[in-house]
Image (tube, rainbow, N blue to C red; front, side, top):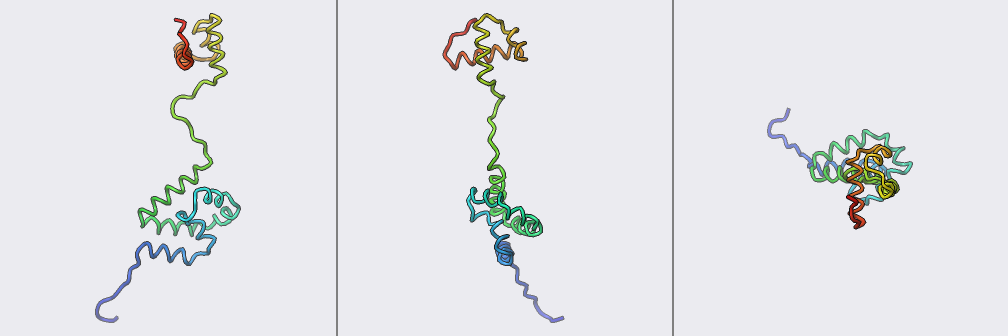
Length: 149
């Protein structure tokens, strides 16, 4: 064993990542180059046949993500973009309670105007009288009508 100091050269995580990507086939490099593709391009790429055929390269993905985790800002960006791509086709839900369809609301108003009481309307729609009262009141406010009570 030689005496003296050992000079070990350490690579930065960025250098290791670039080296890892440089050694990979171009088709795999494109699959994980999140920063160079727009969201639409990523969606098209991931939905294409090539992505699914190459997705068996989980070892490559595991190695890529392992190196990327050592670079916090790039890892956060990768996770954010991956999440955006995954949710790209999913419709957004609206917060709050589910709204009563307008046809049901119109029918409730019509029955109320015909003289039905809230209990009878509630039984017809499977609601509580309180829920019917609140929905009719909200509909009246939206339409600018005066309440019957």
